Image 1 (cartoon, rainbow, N blue to C red):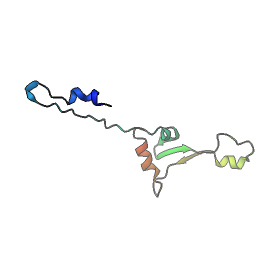
Image 2 (image 1 turned 120 degrees about the horizontal axis):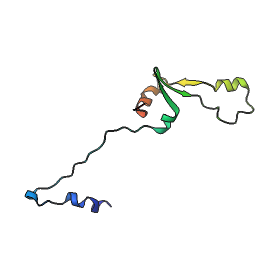
Image 3 (image 1 turned 45 degrees about the horizontal axis):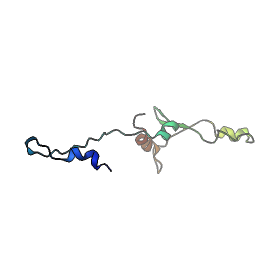
Image 4 (image 1 turned 90 degrees about the horizontal axis):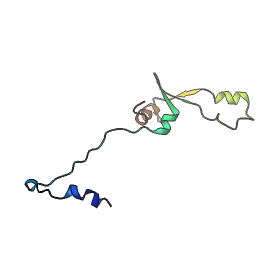
Length: 94
């Protein structure tokens, strides 16, 4: 598929009978996980997000149940779900 595209780079050059070897340059830029970027915000103490379950379908719920789904949650920094470490990798430029 790409044989014709790279053919000029892989052929012999007539300049002093040397062989041109193409050099591959890769960029060392990490990509931001867009879903994590939309949910999490960086704070001085770590990362925070809004609680889920309050967007729609709340007409028949009591006010005490709705209050439980209000506010923010912080990322954990220890245990099995070490979210601070994971979020640091997913959000390198935040």
